Length: 238
Image (cartoon, rainbow, N blue to C red; front, side, top):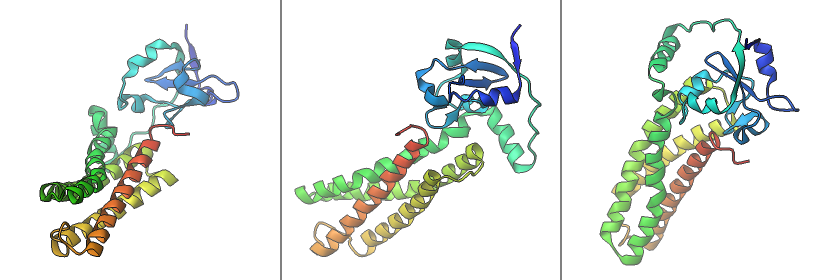
């Protein structure tokens, strides 16, 4: 007969100070102490031992089948969580039926502005080196599409923050939110400059063209750092 764990016993299995690395999924307790991906009781810098990961594993890149590699050592005895009401309750009910939308929309959407805006300075340099209006036009199209994609990335980012992090603050999330808005307003400003002040950067005054390029380089750096911060939420850099 399998052991029935209390919530306190589960919470003590943090994987630290020689304690076992315990997690529970759908009421079953697993010992992950032998996993190299759970060093010190932390997985992907997001998931911590001693917790119920039932909701997280349903929206993870892998399914619960990965747990078959480890020993199921017992069952968790706990009171059912209080049922959420109102808007949050309806959202949680919908996400239970469609777990894909708990995490994946933001990572899928945010790659569009990141990819498009990172490539703009490269295209702009090639356009000037080769005196190619078509390459410069491609840079402008990437700027337009990249800026247009930022609002969707912001909306899905706030949704993910609300659903998965309970709007809990952290320095990484705070910087990511602020810089996303900086990138949006900077991008709108660059579009204004490109359309009304520098209609042809290839023939514009050198100082004006250089200032426009510095703006493109700046938005590329900002959006690249936003992408880096997003990676820190899922990949342990240190």
